[in-house]
Length: 153
Image 1: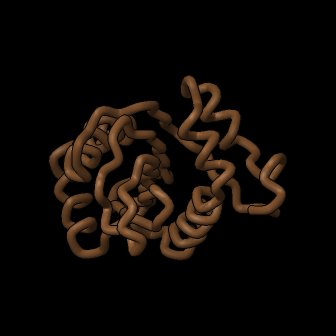
Image 2: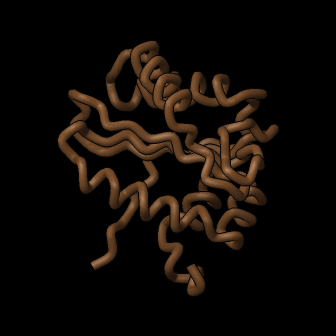
């Protein structure tokens, strides 16, 4: 059985010029969906990013947190109009950002989700398709069953 990832929110071509602006956008959009305080979420994201940059290379960043009080995992993927610096080892700024939020009690589940998202988003074919996607429906189609067309993942 595969560990499936459901993407709760997809946003295309976000206009942000820095990692902080990207995280502000994510905190604002996600807070409404998960019923948490936007400013608390942003503070936690900024602290996490400062302590452990989320850039994984190849133009991708995966900020992630485990939050007390969160009932279910929440995943948001955005593409950016302008790449932002997320501290990747390859020094490449990110234009694909995926936020993973998990309940605090989901230690191993959180890590498995992070691992699955990382493997998916490291695939150059998927990166290319996400960057070229014309709308959120197209993005969702690529993400719904990536194993169906990403045989080399």
